[in-house]
Length: 519
Image (cartoon, rainbow, N blue to C red; front, side):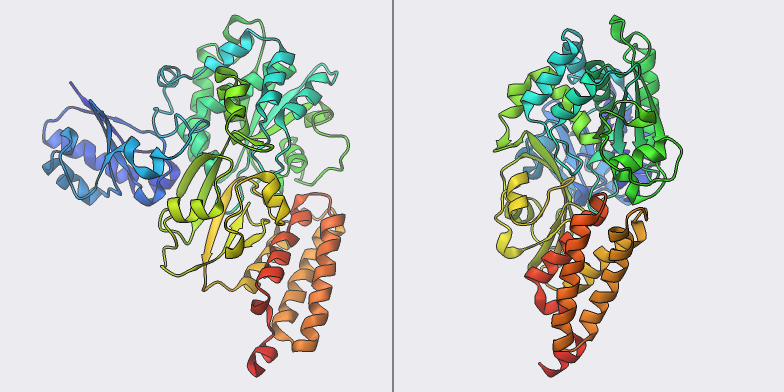
């Protein structure tokens, strides 16, 4: 009887040598005449332990990591296939504290199933949500999503059910479902992990959305830098179509839903939903004026639901287990769980899915293990390159949309980047403005010109004397307010967040060279 060994095919694990590890295990097993079956799963999200190899045992999976190809012979010598101890032994995978304390709903199968196997997906509860949806009317499905409290996990946190209802109520002969998979925020990788590790859940979620609002066609607008996700999705779409989960007659329901992947344009601005639609239509990625909202007049002028990967991948759980089950997680108006991605200067980087309510400090200290450098934490940026910098005095803020708004921050896509006390916050503020200047679509003046002038003012702040510093700080704050109030989209409208938070919490880093020399 063959022994099942799991080696991740996740892009993060591949970058750390997972392909060489898989080949080495195959070669060594053949040399020793041992019958094994290698499954290329997704990552569990414990990136400091990648490549993490797992072996199927009678009591569950045993984990080993981080494994390199040179370690494989030693693992066989230690009889790792039969629970033998080795320096890289991590024990039972589910008992690893980092995993054991999580509440994985959206990521319940990621790292567990074979992403290319529909049978594996169904064995682990896949397509039960769609089956439930097929027994409901469109309005009932939309109401379930509304009652669950699910809000968009892509950044804006707009209630998904309201967006779906708007599209459902719109009168049109053609409607679309668009998945925003152009994951470009710094420190984020949750979308990629789902698409590479559990692609069928995204397909199922989009199919449910299509049946609910009356859309017959869907597009996954995929970040061009994600070739592994592209292959996983296209393989899963083909399989789903062959098995009747996509096509003209979804599971004999008489309803149609077709799905395809479109590669993105390589521009950060195309992560903004209206710019994404322009790109998907073959045009230059520029922001559209709103109204009309995409749910009323979106792709090719037709009603369109646009959600990101995590949002759509959460829908099958809600339909399978019920709106109340999902709503019972979280706090306040932030319901369910949020997959948070730990990155930056941390000992343990990786994905953590927990219900809303835990604090930034818990994430950084209990999950992240503190800084990799051993120095003190100075700032944490939450929500990508446009997110505010959170000082240590605010680390006890709960992970909650409204709590973050109260301190001038945002949760965004759940990316968390940690900086130690060696960071220059003026340089980080300059980077935010420079990033906006480079990535602006150029359509509105506050974003296009304001970001360029912002870089110049920060440079003058750093170089000037005390009198000039005060004048330039006032100018920079005024400029930020213009961008906040006058930009067409979130790129220009949120680029001031990191700048203003750096000015407010780390003013000493903006001291001019002349001022610093006399202090």
